[in-house]
Image (cartoon, rainbow, N blue to C red; front, side, top):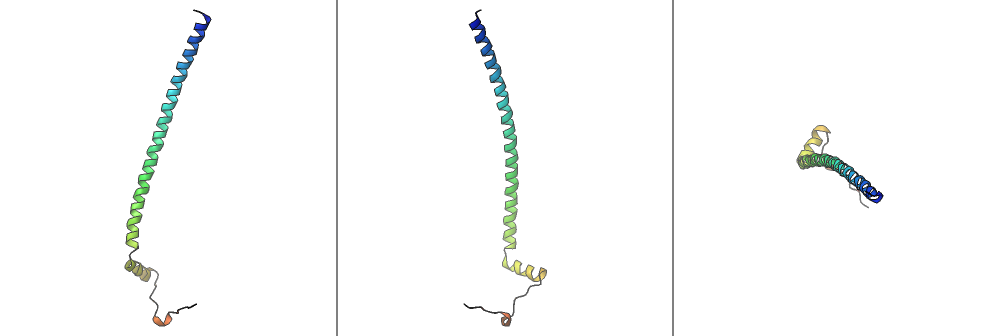
Length: 90
């Protein structure tokens, strides 16, 4: 076995070991990214559920009759009398 053959074998061994380490590292990164993706999907689903609840609440609270009822009961607000209304003109 010549010196060139020995050098070639050692180089190929290092190349095989290096590629094996690279594969293990790539697999590890892939698993970490998958875990992060799952967390983001869970967060997205949670935000989607909150959005749906907010849309339902907006539909309920946006009702003018309900808003007037709440204003009267909680804030003691009343419709002004016609004599109390002042119209400003430019």
